[in-house]
Image 1 (cartoon, rainbow, N blue to C red):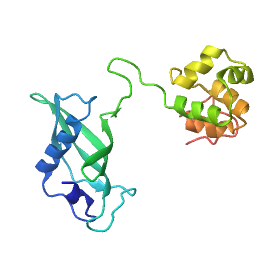
Image 2 (cartoon, rainbow, N blue to C red):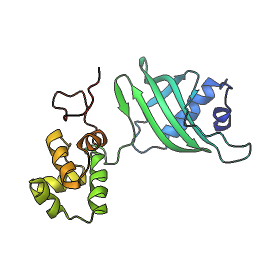
Image 3 (cartoon, one colour):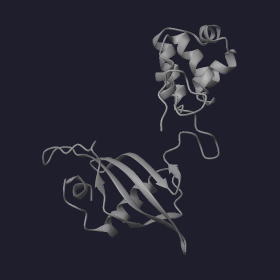
Length: 196
């Protein structure tokens, strides 16, 4: 199936086989609810980031696959999945089901995943050789706030991002984008372009 997905310009004619292939990939993921099954798939589309190499070479394939999931009798949900494969190994899976995005979780079931900005913040601080105590002093925030931000246990809000940007001598607009702050938000940083 990976070989069929890796051929540019050729469609996958075995939709049932592709559904079974996607099910087998999902069944290997520890966070996937195995009650849901891929019941139908549409024609996959290659993503621009796909890398087609010479025949016989390692293939990295990224496709967008529309389809539907079923849970038992009658309950079905439409999905669009972005799948990235290296040979027959799954590198990335992200699926939008209805208005929800489903992807791999880092935390065990029932626990909140850390906010991804925590890892970026930790790296930026380490690259500058600063301690959490020094960051707390530079931002005027409590040490517990800095630790929570570093560990991803705190969702960054605009005022904190602006303080961190000043402390790290970075543009607050750039750091806000990295933190996932919406530039169209009414509390947007001056100088950030507004959408719409």
